[in-house]
Image 1 (spheres, one colour):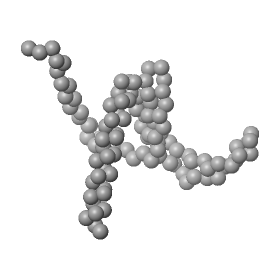
Image 2 (spheres, one colour):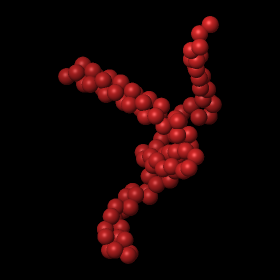
Image 3 (cartoon, rainbow, N blue to C red):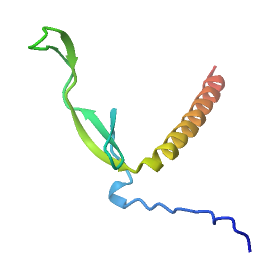
Image 4 (tube, helix red, strand yellow):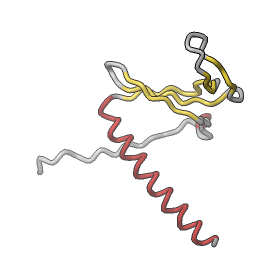
Amino acid sequence: MTDQPLEHRVEIAVPPEQEEGTFAALASVWRTQDGFVIDFATEVRPPELSEDPDTGERYVHVPAKVVARVRIPPGQVWELMKSLEHNLSAYERDRAARDRDVS
């Protein structure tokens, strides 16, 4: 026997009603004392030019609605970042290969 910890293999099941997923064009990340919160949102109306009543500063107001809120413990943040980086790199490689095949 070894003192090595056993590998964890997590099997994630997606309920049928959630298999399609939810589209989100925006994400906002914030934190609490207990963890991190990611709000996924989508625009509900076209952006509109607005003016701050206190400063007079003009800005583009983007009305959006949260379609999913996900709370994760601090220890999962690094795993999420590594997974996003790994998958983004693979996506970029695949896209570059497709672009070369098309030209």
